[in-house]
Image 1 (cartoon, rainbow, N blue to C red):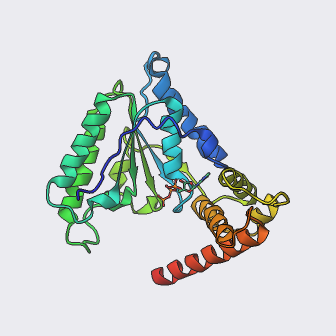
Image 2 (cartoon, rainbow, N blue to C red):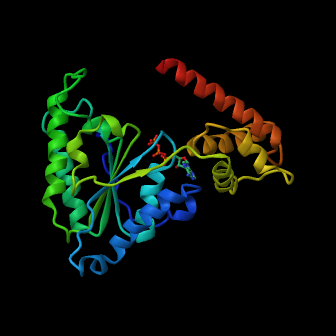
Length: 270
Ligand code: ATP
């Protein structure tokens, strides 16, 4: 029962069309797509292609989705791992996983490496040793820095990392030639929530008069992941009642259920 650490797939299925809202972030990652597709265009004048970018924003806002869409748009393989996989790992394992990951990505370049929850390995060193596994975390972080410094500008592997706490990250990660770009992925506003609803309503059999503007207005503070959840939950609620289509009331019930869940989650945290 080994944890699945990186799944490599040419995730050509995910594209920018799947990512609703996030216009600014999409514009910024479009440049990364272009680096992957036409590296010579950028290096011909002596420029260096960036090695990494940090996607910063609250949970569920589409950071993973955006990283997959970059791979999909550039038609390159997507290698990923999550920082949380490295918590409680035996000595040396974290560093060797990082080494393997970069080795595979380089073999299949051009490619994308995605590191979710990078804060779990990339927290500032030498502070707050709660877990007792700080040494191993530091080894893993050091290996990551070594790998990023080690590959040349013509390797054409771009590392995207996601975090909701850029402030706790070790400054060494943000140095030039590492994650020297930050791309902000915020909670959606009402207009963006409507767009996200439209993406996730597509597969549903919905009542004809369903008002998407109304749904967007009813869901302030919801992330894209919450909205995806609402749509799925509404479909299940309607099905349970043997309905032929999902209507407004099913969505309102789903919103209530998700809000209830969010409140519970927040209670545990505070
Ligand atoms: P975390 O920080 O918790 O890892 P994340 O920012 O990486 O979250 P994702 O895992 O990309 O968020 O989002 C989870 C799911 O929510 C996506 O697979 C998608 O179904 C939906 N979703 C989130 N944001 C968007 C969006 N902007 N457009 C469409 N769907 C979205």
